[in-house]
Image (cartoon, rainbow, N blue to C red):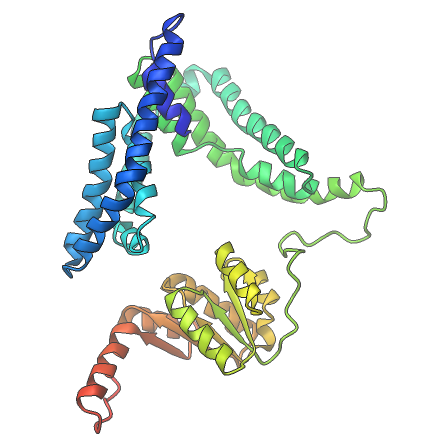
Length: 394
């Protein structure tokens, strides 16, 4: 996608003897932009973020993140002929080098949601429903290319890597649809005069139909894959495999243990304290690097989303003594608590919250203790100022 975004503007309308020279100029500009970002941007942009962060103004920090992203994107387009989308992508790559990248991502989350909504609304407004009536065969052809073409290519790559057939078929089905990148390419092709409006209408119709048909295709492949996998093996197993539980991750043998969800800033402190106290612990985390780090330290760690019931089963939640939900997502924490309470009615559940409404939400779903960060900070300050007075519980 990056290569296409780079090459299309530089090569639009060129051919013959001008092709190689245009290609060289385009890659030369791209290399100059990347070198500038790596040599200068990696130092200047993180320094700017740290300087703004030390002012203590949350609004100024959010504005700085937006200004850096848009400024780099616009500068890349004007000075190097790189598209705005690609310039913004490189700005994000450089921002990720800063220690404040996580905070920048959190601060820009409302903007990302707003832009995502506007993007898809604009795509819906560009869609021409009459194309389904005027060009039905063309629309079906595009949908067939998307569904069959993507599925066959992805399946071939998976099988070439010698992956199990059932899992390969599931991966291929998941990649059978197209989304926002196809819209970006279609609009870029329209702007460069490389695509007629009919082509864009067909792409939009094909993308929408492929998204609608994707769940049905995934359901079929999920059921069909294990059966075909059994037929391909000579000693076919008598029972069908369980597709939902990862076969590479056995259930923990621990009992009367603590299940810790999330190993971020809060979860790490809890996990280290439990490990120091020699309390049996199982960590569930969705980041591969943290999982590998924990396993290297001798901590049982499960890769996956704790909101999935099978992941909690692998952690032996039914025989656990306590559950600590250290993730900042209150909605997902409520789902986890509800499933854990159903599997183990006597388990002690502790979760974090960011507001009084989240506290009530978590208690409704079975959390025994919901801790709000601001409230605990206030208690710590009161305890320092008035050590002889126990702060009253609100």
